[in-house]
Image (cartoon, rainbow, N blue to C red; front, side, top):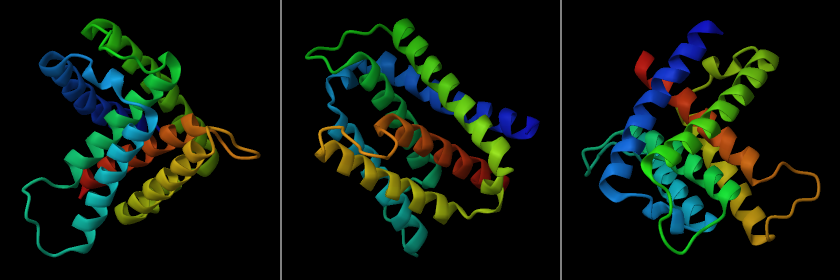
Length: 179
């Protein structure tokens, strides 16, 4: 699992660098987004990836990797929103936002390591298209939970679904860099 940990960190470094650069450009404007808005942003990115995987012609010169990075960063933003709540005006400076980002990554990576131990890195034998489908399934679950006012009877909450989407997107990125 040593390789997975290093590969995971390399993907996160790319995502984190983009997050920080966007914080420099835009500040924490994303803090006004409600969870369904973030979920919809993630859904758009996942749908685009699926379209790229199914269509022979691409009309926009951006590949799957940039969309997976978007999924990762939007999911981390959603986890921060779950923790801190939505605000009416941007309220985070870059340093605090980055610390919150890092805390969510740490918890999500630990979840990945725990599951990876139990599942024996089964994701390595999966296709990127299957990981995309799992992300879309998780998004549909999150939308249903949101429609149920965040309540579940026997299922994981929204936070666990966002964490799984982050990990699936990171696994996809690892696969794409190994091709």
